[in-house]
Length: 271
Image 1 (cartoon, rainbow, N blue to C red):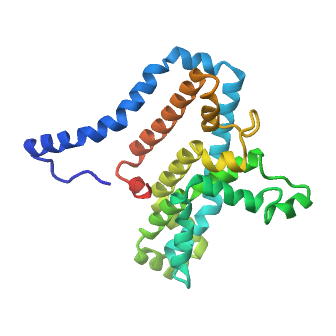
Image 2: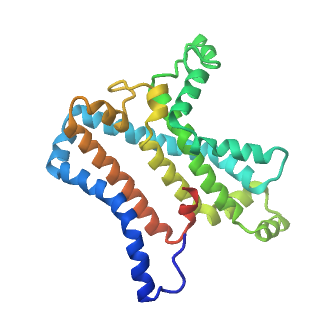
Image 3: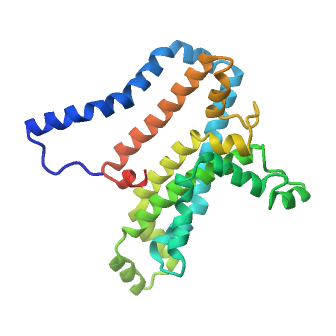
């Protein structure tokens, strides 16, 4: 959301700030406590261990792969929903956004019964010698299922914001649909696409529920940072704190840098 066009009067500013303090404190104090309990030297020491490095590497590689998959296969769908009217479009639009509000555990169960070894489609894949469940591919699939709709929503908003007049003018000049998309739609909507991609990555790197059900929590194979945090509570609190700080810092810097790049673009509209 864009900033107010006119500044608040000092009295109004003080009142609004005072009313904002309880929520600010609630959001900030747990993060402050987390950093106080996990000093920098502990984090550096934890990053030297092979187990933590492996977990961090898997988390970043799968979440980046998820963001890439979301862009490649999500862009056509977002463009379709933004620029065309067709029967059952409303239902398709609703289904596309459903994973955003769906409990992650339900998403994991759905993926498991669909693509697990004994699943509706997984049994066919198993017959071909292809195993999906409890593999790194399953991690990416789980992350994509729950996170890609954020990119689709953001891209849809960006494409829909492009004026129809410009598109019609380009078509009158003889531009093909691909040329309109490549030279007009993408350049004008790129900030929304970038914002949605960043939100997808941030959601993917923190995904837990769908991943643990569909991909499992196999050390060195499917164990991401959120899964290691869950497992670590019973064994090593220092590792849990260090991984938590890494996740917080990663998400914060991505969002902070993105807001600096986009200035006033509609990233807020996708969350």
